[in-house]
Image 1 (cartoon, helix red, strand yellow):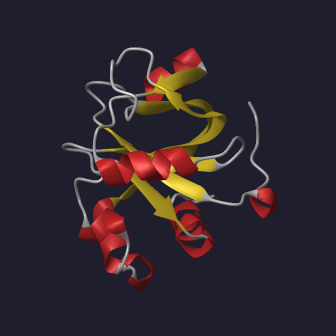
Image 2 (tube, one colour; image 1 turned 30 degrees about the horizontal axis):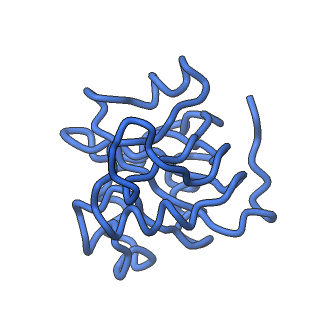
Length: 144
């Protein structure tokens, strides 16, 4: 599996997914996928900013509510081939590694690092930017 070089990552992201629809297990099995289904304007803006080789924490929503894996962007934003709307875009991501243990939302909410984060303040936002300290806090919480 590919490894991320954190020092060279200009930006980091958190991508939310409902595991009953598409889970980190699915991404690991496929190796790579088109990250689609995003309609929120703010989330689409974040996706347009994503660059190749940037890291993404995969976060399961629903009952799980936890960060579960790491991926990387392998193709920057492009028009969603399944939509007839030029505003709808997708990115391609590839699995990097599963977190040793899931990092629950309750742990992230308890950290001052996430107090102003859209992860906590805009709970329904499906693409969330992370800063280096937040990324590292998730890795630490996962035992990496």
